[in-house]
Image 1 (cartoon, helix red, strand yellow):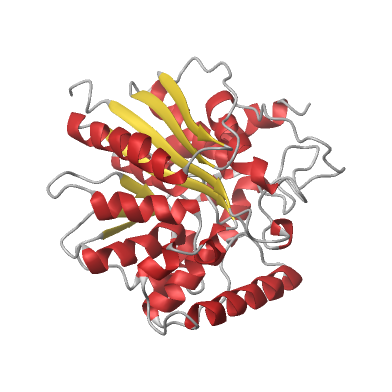
Image 2 (spheres, helix red, strand yellow):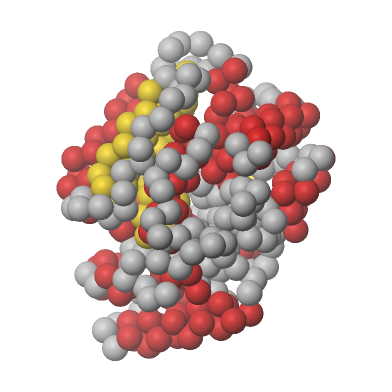
Length: 354
């Protein structure tokens, strides 16, 4: 196997839909009130360094993360598990590199990580979205494809599922309910009201799906949707796309790009829990030439309750977790090896909290 074929580059799009009011009331993921924009930054730090290095300035106590290092629902951050899988792949002889593209959020702080071959963080709070896409994201992904590296494209977007649901409603005609990281009734009602408002506003501009109308108004999209759409729209014919490691945040711009690039083909790699509820209906709209690849690993085989909760669909937003699981399985790692790697990542993370 050549060096390029033995290299895994994990790319993550980080962003927060700060144009949405009261983000903490729309999601169970994240750092809490007035801190949601720090979540993508801290998740990238978790993946790279094993700990969140950016402080939660003036954070109320408790935050969305408990003192035990778990999410409010008792699960563990998918960023911890993505780290565990990438670390496991590195231990199997793969060269693992990390790239983060930060759209309007703080650039992750560099920390020590011996198993990562390299880590680069691009963009930042003041980054221009178009510049970051055109001068950094696209050239980086194209270079990885041209070199024959294993290229994963993931995302960590706070609030973005509101926009992806809006796009998917317009694209598919399905009366989708709010998707995302919460099952809290009050939060879902607030999200439903916001979606209805956004759809009503959009209908004043167009009665049918029009990607140009959606991208012309930040009320109807976030930076991650723009980045994914433009990557697919401008991708050269014949060059393999990155492995799209995520669910609805990728499917919405993918379906939009397919309307203008019907010959484009690739894969969407995500967790099988995405198929619960309305996910199966949405993924049924994937173009025929696109592959949907779901993980098979059973998290109930873990001895940790915070991992078992994934099988209940309580943690659905993933920092590329599903894509990394699919890749590990395709590269021949057994379920026992994968669960062991995830368990080690949980123990390492929990030990930081005493």
